[in-house]
Length: 377
Image (cartoon, rainbow, N blue to C red; front, side, top):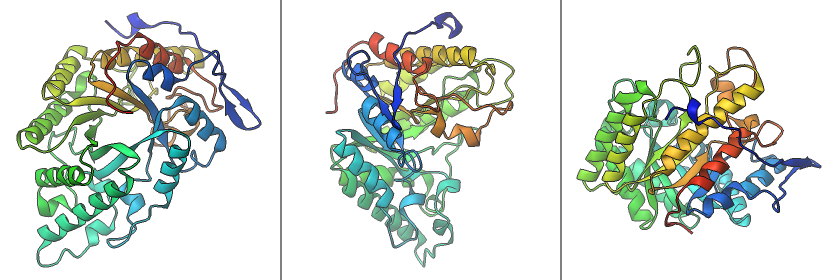
């Protein structure tokens, strides 16, 4: 079924802002977390930086989410100022707040297998006479330290992020993997995480999609996962980032051509390996959509509903995470601006923290989903 044929007007209640804080009318509007939990699903979002500093935004997240993930605070560039030291202040603050608020926490990410997003010092570091051993030492020490620190609060870690080049299908290299080999680096990351957190969900996270042009990326991720499973590497789930919409901002109309048949075949292969699925970074890149807010929001909502209906048709999908709740704090605003200069509307709440049709679409998808056995508290 096409996204257009599944378009619908979805009802929703309002979220009011009172004295600078978000107030949810819990009597008339169940939270997204509660709707998800009723079906054995966890719902959450990302936090960090300026949005975490906003008390109204923290209130919104505490009201709507069952778990959070630090947006950047657990990445190498945030935790590792140099080869010897760690800076846990930002990550600790998010985890401590989440625990006080009764929220779960996901870990993101123990290794971003992409040179551009690793600290500069990893490229200038003196790897000595045995660079392979030194690279392994750095990787093991980092992952072991981070996982043991946060395992009491974190039961699901994105161990490796975006290892596949979507254009070539080859594995990205970093300063570490240039000495260890890309596959060996990924294997070592997962084995180290498993040793430090014996019961945690260990996730490979990437942005392959249901777009018709993304076949090479999907095939390469399947090859990576097949190799991990065959070698006994302890990966337990695939994180599907779910940045929806065409990545090509010059696309003439709509949110891109979809290949739902190929996408289901891909998900069937992944789950057939015994792996779980997570939606880890949901948002909608709305550049090709109309400038008018009403039509744009309706198309975003319809696209989101169709996508979540498909993903949640798999009982192995028990986690859905937005990459932010409010348009005010979306990474897409600066990194992928609309050509008409208007603010993007990629998330379930607008810049004033009022709910949008996308919020209603997520709620409706949870309500329609078949119950599944919850695997997390």
